[in-house]
Image (cartoon, rainbow, N blue to C red; front, side, top):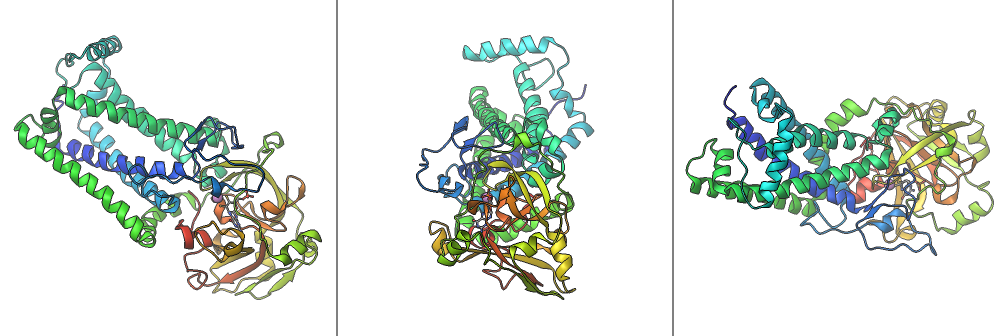
Amino acid sequence: MMALDFPLWLRIDHWLNVLFLTLLLRSGFEILSTHAKLYWHDDSAPGTEWARFTRKVMTTDKLYDTLDEEEDYHPLIALPGRSQLGIGRHWHFGAVIGWMMVGLSYYILLFATGQWHRYWPYSWSIFSEAWNDIVTYLSFNLPPLLPGEPLDAIQKLTYAGVIFILAPFQILTGAAQSPAIAARFPWYVRMFGGRQAARSLHFLGLLAFVVFIAIHLSMLFFWGWGRLTALMIFGTVRNVYWATASSLVIIAVIVAVHVAATVWSQRSPASVRGVLGAVISVPRKGLLRRLNSRQDYPAHMLSPQHRVNGKPPTAEHYKVMAVHDFVDWRLRVGGLVEQPVTLDLDELRALSEPHTQRVLHNCVQGWTSIGEWTGVPLGTLVDLVRPLPQARYVCFMSMQNNTTDEPSADGGGQFYEVFDLKLAHKPQMLLAYAMNGKPLPIQHGAPLRLRAETQVGFKMAKWINQIEFVDDYVHIGKGRGGWREDNVYYGMDGEI
Ligand SMILES: Nc1nc2c(c(=O)[nH]1)N[C@H]1C(S)=C(S)[C@@H](COP(=O)(O)O)O[C@H]1N2
Ligand SMILES: [Mo]
């Protein structure tokens, strides 16, 4: 058998892994903070969480939405901290790309160089040896290394478990949370017991990593920090003092990256969104954009109480329309089209046979619910108005004005969301006027809302009264492609 030493690539991958894994942990806590409750059931019904990391108690005497439930974590544990979900997501997805590239190079080199032997359990006796090792550690002694190998039995099993089970498990449960993957492969999400189970398992995987890191660090002190960092920096045990000093320098660099990431995020979230968004959009567009929703949940799975996000319009004329079942409501469809139209609710309904879909709603914050939506396929309306060749985007505008309707939000003005026109003809892109067999309730967007089933929830504008076809969106709002993009720095495309 070859020498199981510490080749350069292994040492580099180790430290890069430390960097990316810690970025993933902190940004993961940021994502958790926006809905700090974990469920096993996809309804995410209030009160059914099995774990919560917030002290906020919601009272039901007034309408609250899930934005009101957001937590605010300190930057010491969350990247960037202070309820910046949009930026936290950019760090999480940016870091996971780096982490997976490091992981891939590690796997390839591990097998190409024969170093995988270090993780291969050659006999069953390794399990009883591992048990003995644990007992030895608990009595504050050091167990023997395996003959000819750099690890003891419990170390070997633990590393093998982290590298070949825990890391892939986090990737698989992470992928199950992408709305595009969940929409195209509902069976994949079911494999984990549902979308909320996948999210809960992803969290437990995170905990496992935290426990692993804690034990790993305490073992370093136990075995001798200088000796082991020498192996991981120089590849051999030499000059323990230099090794100790160098390890502190490496750790300082990693901490500095975290501090820089945090400060950059707080000072200039728009540029973080721009830079990391450009990186993330490569795999997102390449892999997820093409996926089509194929959901058809059974009726018995519909959530008795579909969760809500966003506060309904409070304007007088909206309330008057609502009282009269929206007979006075009009949908204006125009912009770069051959045939602008203005439709009332009956005319809109008459555009096509009612299309119904029973689907999982994925809020960007992490909660889900299952609903049945009925309406007109967006593609039918697009074909009716015939966009001009210059039209590249379609903008959905709502009657909701956040200045008055959701004053606690991080910005004001009219809610809108922009889509690439190429998405308009996708299956299950729906202008919905009914939910669970009844006219659309006010809190879910009456009289008309969008359903875009491969996207996260924030893209699906509610209380729509205008649809504009445009060549660019830089002149709308702050020019980033939607109200949440403008004000809380979400990425414009919602496949993850
Ligand atoms: N006009 C408007 N539409 C909106 C929002 C909003 O705040 N205003 N919130 C979005 C978000 S973040 C989500 S998760 C979904 C929630 O849809 P639901 O309330 O029907 O579950 O609506 C989306 N549409
Ligand atoms: Mo959302």
